[in-house]
Length: 124
Image (cartoon, rainbow, N blue to C red; front, side, top):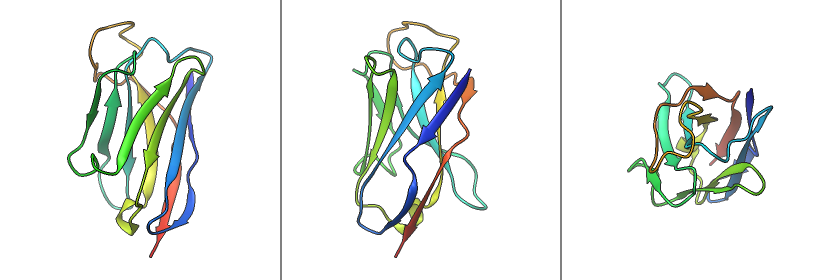
């Protein structure tokens, strides 16, 4: 099973991006999912998580006003909408899945599968 995040790129401050995450070899539609990022020289940072239904979401306080996590289980894809990008948002963005829990109510945070990441670079 391989998770793949995509949609990153080089953008100017103030722009928006939508990142996508899908899995090859397995459905993600039954599982909680999350987004993380790691900036150069920094530790990996939790950004947002979503339950398998898409009803429950959770955000880091640092991004909750500009980031929106969502999913489309009919497309077996999860998204992260990022608005008003800032240079400090420059990082590799990773998606993660909690494949250990299927159809669990609420968000499960035991992320056990990680994608390779997509680079977001924001110029000032």
